[in-house]
Structure formats: structure tokens, C-alpha cells
Length: 401
Image (cartoon, rainbow, N blue to C red; front, side, top):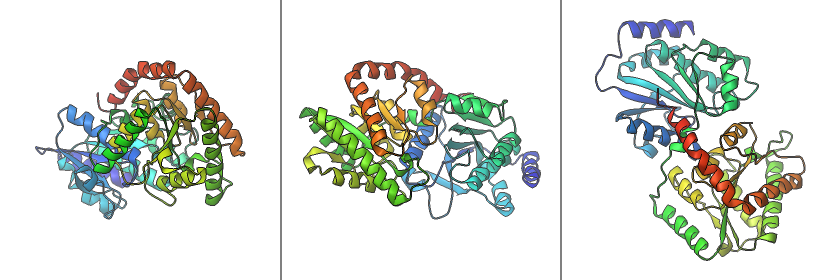
């Protein structure tokens, strides 16, 4: 990092950033395709625009995958990896007023240690060039690699570290106590809307089922939910199918008028959320009129609209859960990284599960939470809504000084 600091200091001394009409630079948490990451970017843009910001640039992870088309924003370039890349970026800093890095769950080395360090090096470089840097609401697991701890300790005190749950806040405060701030996830700022004809169709069908007296129960599932490292991908699929088939059969045995609503949140990979949902619907043998399955691309604002109509959501996707909680809908979470507990603490809830070796054991636990939520639905809805104002204020704190 020594060479980066020298280069950044040179930029600062040359006052490269003293240019009118500068832009806010945003680094997303990942490549396009994940609606949770889209929800965080859109939530951030909503806050910044509310504060009067009008000019934005995005950073891409490669030249072939960009958020620009989806968000209607220009790309400022690719996240630098080499010293040559940083030298090229040094001439772009004059355009930048502030750097926001969407932290999410990608700064503790869980998915990629090198990519985590790459993000933190960029924060280090931009901050030493004299430009304000904020790492927005992120989680920190309880055992990050030493390299990650070292990188956080090297960050200048001017870098604002925003932790999106109390547990992560305590963990990072032990690493870098000078610049940590308690916030909530930016996705709570997402504004719900329907844009495409397909989104409007799904929402209309959902409302139609409610008008028929059906109870919509949402399912947003993925293989990450199966926190059993000894299983192969095919075995994780079998585990998830067995568990959720058990859950659905239990629910339908006591509530014949339940309408399962299968919602995807990540269209990347194989199998992605759509394939998982389709496989589950097929295994359960549902007739087309008995369930709703979202099997085409939809937007994060549309998912929040769908979730607002649910009675209960069962999910392994935290941001789909946030879309539901932000609408007052109780959520049963699969917690596979320890990041959900901090979120549910905001709402004084304790309804997360972890995958057990026997899928029927997990199914029984999920069903128990479902019965509790369904039997006392008004109580839990009011409990969520009564805490939502506080959580929204925490979410705004990602941007507010």
C-alpha cells in the first residue's frame, strides 16, 4: 500500500479534485444480477438525490458486466487491480466529490478474499487523495481473515465505516474504533414500483388470489441457505427440496387456502433462484392456479411491491427479507452467515433457522415459526411497523453526517 499512498498523496497535493460539477462515485457490491445489490444501490441513490446530488458515476468490476444499463448511469471505469490501473484512476479523481462503497456482505473475505482486499485498497487510495469515502452498511462475520483485519486497520480515520447490524458494529469497533457508525441496510430506502408489463401482471395475479380469499405465503430460496459444507451441489438441492416440500405440506395440511408465491432474488449462477423455485413447485405437484411463480427477470422495486402483499415470507435471501420487513411482513430467515441475527434484533424478532443435517428437523422448526407468526399475525406486524421508523433512520445514517 506504500506506493498507493505516495500516488494518492501526490494527487492530493496537486489538488486534482478542485473541479466544478464533480460527481459521486459508487462501487456496487457485485456484478449485475442480484436484486439485493440493486436494492442497495437504488436506496443509496434515493438518499443522495434527496440530499441534492444529481451527478453519479458507477465503478464496474469488468468491462463486460456493468450496472450502467440497468440503472441509467454512466460508468467511471473498472475497479483498479494494478499500479498502472491506479495511475489511470489518479487522473479521474478530479471528477469525484465522494466515494461510496456498497459494503453489504463482501468485506469480510467470505466470498473472495482478494476482491475484499481490492475494495479496501481502493478506499485507502481515494481517502489518501483527500476525497471523502464512505463504506455503506455492511456485515462482518466473527472470524474474518487476518488480511482483512489488517486492511481495515490501515484505512485512514476519515473513512466512514457503516455497520448494518449491532453485532457487526461491535466486531468492527474492535478493529477500527475511530470511524465506525451504526446504520441499517440501504435497501430499507428502496422505493417500491412496478415498471414492466410482466411485473404488473404478477402483482395483478397476486391481488386476484387475495381477492379470492387466498393467503399468499412467499418463498425466496437459494442453495446458500443449506449451510452444510459436506454436501455436494446436487445433495444441497435434494436437501432443500425435501425440507421445503415438508414445510409446504405441513402448511397446507392446516391452511388449505394458502397460495405459495415463489420469488427469485438472484438470477446469476446455475442453479439460480428461478431454477430452485421451479424445481420446488414441480416437486410439490402444484396446479398452475394454486401458486404464483416469478420466473422472468423483475426489478428490486417490483419485488418489494410483491412482498408487501404477503402474509409471511420464508427466505434465505436477506434483501428479500428486508423488502418484506420494510412492508410490515413477518419473515422466517435461513441464516447461513450469521448476518441475519443482527437484522432481526432491530425488530426484536427471533425467527431465523439454520440448516440441520436432517431436513425434516429444519422443516419442523420453520413450520413452528410459521404457526407462531400466522396465529399472532397482527401482533408481529405491529411489532415490525413500530420499529420500522427507527430502522429507517438508521438506514438514512449511511449518508447523513
